[in-house]
Image (cartoon, rainbow, N blue to C red; front, top):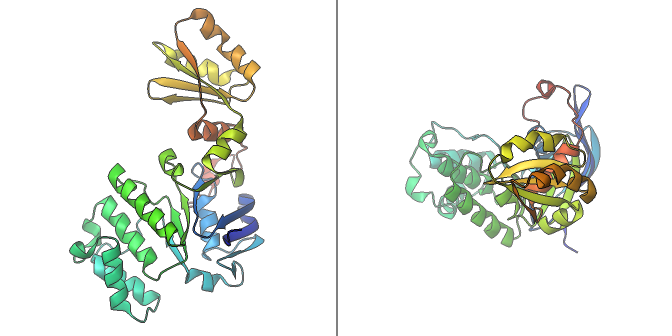
Length: 317
């Protein structure tokens, strides 16, 4: 069996009397890329911060990299690279100066060599004198990843690292992540992009503080037992609201020119679609379920732990 880099059970964090993270269990094997998915406010960021020792859980036990998350948080921090949602380096410092600052924080003995290697590894050498504030989103992302890797961590915790960057930068980033995993580095990465989720070895879907699904892409889709119909044709938009309200329909979502209607009960789904069949104005074909179908249907069934989203503290996603 693969050694576990993350092994936590019953992890819980409360704010204002509500469980933002509600007794979750999470296991990730060494050298694996685990996609951490869920809507905003679902508890992803709070979970990541507890794993790397920035937040203390209210309940739960476990280990990261063989260290106790409660009593050895400082030791965990030195072996983890954490990339936050927002760019967290100094915009008035150059790329090299930022990396040198991070190397000083980790008290690296060969600081200048470590900075040189980080610059080379992420293709930043030619831009090392450029101010971080003048970088595009993709280059800021490279710099942030270089800062995460400079102390040679064994675990990367990446919180929506590709938000706001162009498709090529996203693809390049994921190529780098797979190279790191091949070297034995474990990666837990939160994302909203389904194409990125498909590049992970395994997935964990969290909503309102609870894990709703986990496994490989194929396992999650198969377990959902979703029946999906694709509707196409003029006037399909007029049917969205009635279909969403129909018994047995778990999700209705647009995919390009088509609309996917999904449910688990084939008979109820057929009843919901019967009026459209009778009119015969739309093309209707049975379609294979995809990850987005599954996740939309999961969130439709999940119970919101915050009646008013404004009550949720900032950064609990």
